[in-house]
Image 1 (tube, rainbow, N blue to C red):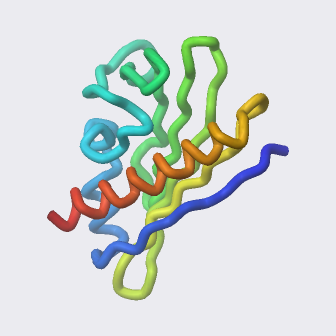
Image 2: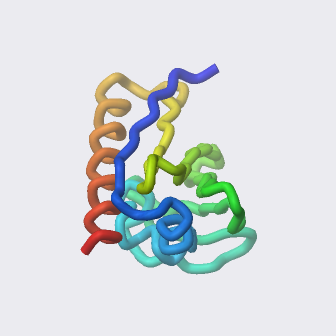
Length: 131
């Protein structure tokens, strides 16, 4: 088992409408700087991107009725990292939740850096959809 932390942000928008607005892989570069520093390109069995630490391949959960936006990032060393991402109802609005798993060999500093990055990206998502 990997240590994990879940981060969330509340957005004043119907959860289903929010999910429909952001579920497509092409939308992620507009707010998820921790995932990619470039536009996504289709390639092989997923999407290709320039991540913060080099080229990555990303597979996304298909569109669904449950607000699941999980993605799987394969780094250049062949490791695949699962990133659970959910949009759920929060009253009349939505809660967007992302779980960060501490990967083997990840230092305290790396884990803290990734947590800050997630918080920044969730704020960027809120700005993107409310702007």
